[in-house]
Length: 399
Image (cartoon, rainbow, N blue to C red; front, top):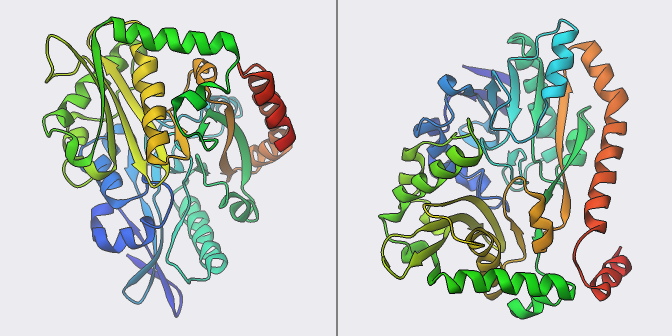
């Protein structure tokens, strides 16, 4: 159903990305830095059975049209739980419950199961972004009120987009992830020089352990990746979820199988092979690249090898990334061990609006204090980085 807003604009809520032709959606998505708002990724998540009403992710995407031209869109989901978001709002859900206020369902803007910064409204070039954003926020408010949704939440937002949405009354909540930045390194040895002597030795020992295990590690992209490895990614992903993250196996086997061939140009695989079998890897790291940004997504191994996780998930992607001109490498959620490999704590934000007046007042009153505490944690983490004194001094001068 299409609702007229102004003579030149109309909005439509769609139940699946596939209702929009790929080329039409990607005219808005391809110019963005993030690869995770592109049609192929979002459609695959839906059609693979990963994000569906049955799994608690009901697609309900907002689109804005001028005549028959798509000029703006927002990937949105009605959520009946908070799993798979990686922004842990359980304290807000608990508070809502204690106040006798329903917290679910809620409206969520993010790429499902993808804690990577970059979410924003998609907008056609040359459009009046301020005007269209105002229309979209008003449409979201009306939709949430009509459907009795507790609030609207945008997660892992593009930092350049954040100030605009804050102007419409959304509260920003500070979090952190661990992100590597290329300081114009020419090679891996230059990257090692940022560390103090003890950590340099430690990294070299970790890489040596993989060599001593007689493992060969290969980085493959696009057409270099054999077709048979795509379904194998699921087995590694599933194995890691079963070992360490029970209840977090959000993506289906079909999702990984369907990455080939239409999204394989974005895929970077780091595969470790033993000398006994040079065709089937014993460990695999799955990454996505767009431009000079690299995103680590999933990792798994079928046998335990000392330090293979560090080699496949950090050192090989960094070494390859330096050669390929990668500027930013986000290795994925969690793990303070990342800071010892050159990944400082880096701020990211989510944006929130509660429609219950009491919850809204509490959020606005306390969120500043919450953010101050989070900033203190970020500062404490980064003061404990194993960098050389020279590197610390350079960072202080840059600040």
